[in-house]
Length: 195
Image 1 (cartoon, rainbow, N blue to C red):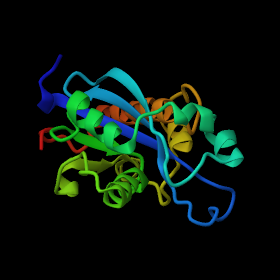
Image 2: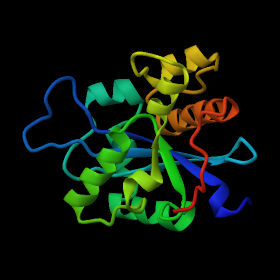
Image 3: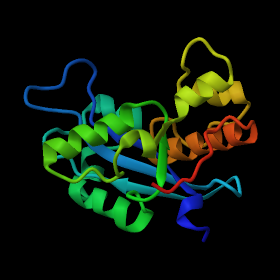
């Protein structure tokens, strides 16, 4: 395995969602964490992972199941958010490795839910040193006026969409392919991946 400083965690989360406003008392909660580990110097994806997370203040709606394919019964077998964060730190070096996501939603959702649940934020601080917004890097590298969604970015880059869109594990894998494309173009902000 490459040294920690060579690795980048690409993260994509799926959260409870509704077609419109959430039911009274319900909030968006992470139900799946997709993670692809990228060896930056070797420019390759080295592993892919999936953590299912059990929501406690909301339930998976029919709309959410249609979008993600995840069901309430499936996520009920997941781990708690606190345990998911411990796994990210203990097994995937989240406290030491840099990480990336498509946009800011994933970073913000982790921050919100960590605060709400009284769980230590797993990615280390300050955030601007640890997190890279891959969507912003892609938009600048391709000279686009608007920030594209992940599926549109894959089309622009001439890359296939692998797996199911809006499934955390597959989206993290696809975002990692876009990171590799940006690395190949010399557009990815390469610096020590260690915090």
